[in-house]
Amino acid sequence: MRLGFFFREAIRSIKANVAISVAAIVTVMIAVFILGTFIPSYLYVQSTVNQQKSRLDIQVYVADAAPQSQVAALQAQIVALQSQGLIKSFSFISKTDALNQFKARLNDPSILTLLPNNPLPASFDVRPADPAKDGQIATALRTSHAIDTTMPGNGISYAETTTNRLLTIAQFIQYAGLVLIAILLVAAILLIGNTIRLSIFARRREVEVMRLVGATNWFIRWPFIIEGIICGVVGAAISVVILWIAKILVVDPYVSTSTGGLTRDSATTIGFGTLAVILIVAGGAVGAVGSGFTLRRFLKV
Amino acid sequence: MSTDADAQLNSESESPAPARRTGRTAERRIDRRSILRPGDGSMVIFDGVTKRYGEDVVGLDNISLSIDAGEFVFLVGPSGSGKSTFIRLLIKEMDASEGTVIVGGRDLGKMGRSKVPYLRRGIGCVFQDFKLLPGRTIYENVAYALEVTGDAPKSIRRKVPEILALTGLSDKSDRLPNELSGGEQQRVSIARAFVNHPRLLIADEPTGNLDPDTSIGIMQLLYRINRTGTTVVMATHDRDLVDKMQMRVIALEGGKLVRDERSASYATVEP
Ligand SMILES: Nc1ncnc2c1ncn2[C@@H]1O[C@H](COP(=O)(O)OP(=O)(O)OP(=O)(O)O)[C@@H](O)[C@H]1O
Ligand SMILES: [Mg+2]
Image (cartoon, rainbow over all chains, first blue to last red; front, side):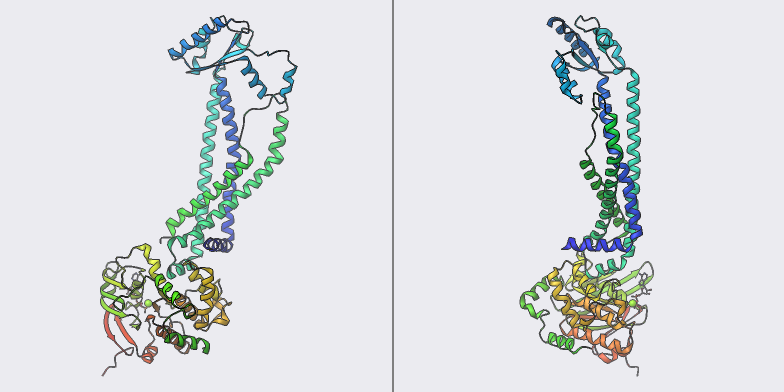
């Protein structure tokens, strides 16, 4: 019943200064909209970057014909380089592992049944301690007879340093995005704060009467906090609807045409349901923080 | 004035239980809600109370007095003599600069800020400007005081019509404050102040905006409330009213206590 009272008072107050509440709602809406486009893109880039990072690994392909002893010798060489500190870690990927990984990237894995046997070689996946020393490691391992020289890079393949640089740029863009989000959230918090400040002013008689008849401080504060949360959640909810429409009309058709090839883009991002929940919670939090700060400053009780 | 309300008020004064309908239990509940417990019979004790505003403005100057539970007291004096200061100290809107203020057995100087709401629930306040909420009906204005102190909806639905009948406002309950006369608005504010049956009712110039006839009506209402056992402290400029009532008069001048007489007039008769 108290909750009922707080909500009734909060809604009464929003109705009483519609224009200002709408301004706050729109600001939250814009901030949350940008947050809502940023989060999936950020995660998508992150996922791509992680894949690119694995491309910094050195692939050492093992010839199908190589005897077990040569493979063991190659592994010993790698272990030796690891103990010198050149190699951070490595793993062995068998022919079956390689095939399974490839299957996972195919839109239609059934086409593999057309193959008479497994064409993929086994390999060592070597992660260098410093990607700039890829060349040094490759030269050292090239002496092994177990290497399948028919594979790309004569059996030892590794990415160029440009890949590395691209990743640095991607990282920078992500940080810039985070700063932009932070600025927008602060703006939204300030605008909600301003709405609540005006609402405190508009309701100063109520506050005076409440104090006079002995309402506790929290009883006086709650309607304002709920007012802030309502503005935040409504703004976020409108954003979620707009984002959903954008997803249906723009993103989904684009994604389905761009991945029409044999393999699909294996980079992943967030599901829309989870995103919607995060955004609405963020909107509510912005509202609560905005009104909280203002109450501390303008409603000394 | 409605005779119904009169009858109720009068019968109320004969049996001191504020809510007779629910009997003893209700009375005990009301007692527990109030933190005012005037143990030795004094509702208000001022002991050497001085209130300074800033460096050199003196609101009250070394006041010592005591008001018994159940008394009716007029607080008189020229403008700026410290009447409102006195009243604001009673509800701990501010603290005394020196001395002790004790209300209902509680030393307000030692009371923490978090207890203040509970102190105020035990004190009804009435002001010259009514302090009604313009967007709400009479019923809602009175119910508001109960809602914000966490009263249950059921008890609100019982208490509000009761107090509106008591103050002669039953037929006005759906009106807005600006649709009432000044006297009626002041009745609403008294209804709101008294709906919890506080043990202390303070009124700062409640008739300040009203014509003499309306003032008498308000005065009678406050007097009947006093007859139910509630201590009433009323600050006023209204010489005729004070002379007519012949109650205890506390006179202030320049923050000093200049007179404290029982059954007195606004001013001492000069020889
Ligand atoms: N908030 C304040 N700040 C500074 N001085 C104040 C304040 N409130 C009251 N005073 C001063 O304290 C003195 C007493 O004021 P108070 O309001 O108690 O008088 P009063 O008897 O209620 O007067 P009135 O009959 O006009 O209402 C006056 O000199 C006034 O100027
Ligand atoms: Mg005054």
